[in-house]
Image (cartoon, rainbow, N blue to C red; front, side, top):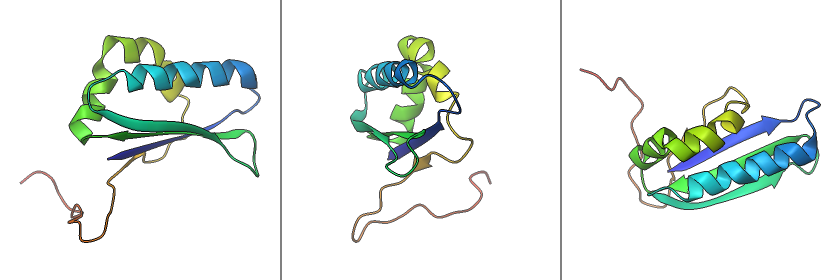
Length: 105
């Protein structure tokens, strides 16, 4: 699964934000189930940043968010993310995708 967190600096000091984002990524990367991740900065709007991470499963990502180190290091940064859906399933050729619908019967 893919997680996309976008951030807008909104006047925050860029260097301090970048250091915090790198620390958040490192904390997440140390968790079980982490596959890969990257930090990026928008070419057209330099105050728009992104942290993308890939996980073995949604459960692995949710467990990572519950870890002490992530709560201490990453959650303060992730709480500044734009308020939008961030969890995506990876769609590959011939893959069965999740069906949108009620999850509780």
